[in-house]
Image (cartoon, rainbow, N blue to C red; front, side, top):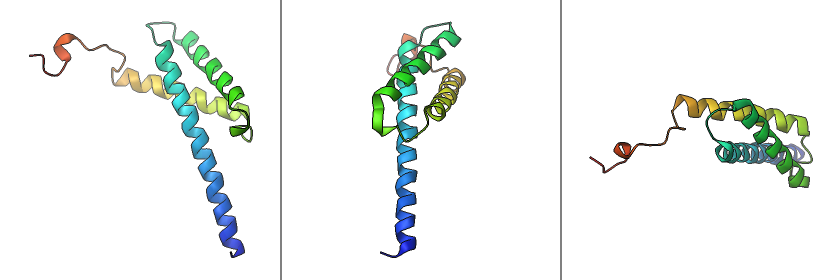
Length: 105
């Protein structure tokens, strides 16, 4: 295999690892945000979600050990803010009324 091809393949593998780690953090944030969602106490809920992500990072061990924990937590913090903002904008927190359900006319 030519040297430049080997380097390209290594770079692609590294990118795939970053994408996999990023997706894992986003999925964890999404699930933790939904788990702690109750009206009010936004900052406390955010801290709880970030503590949960920290625990998951510790448990992930070697899967994420090559990434600095502070970088992972920065991504998680941004993801929490984006996820909450998205749900606020789309009114996703609101429980549907019976009249909102499809088939109820």
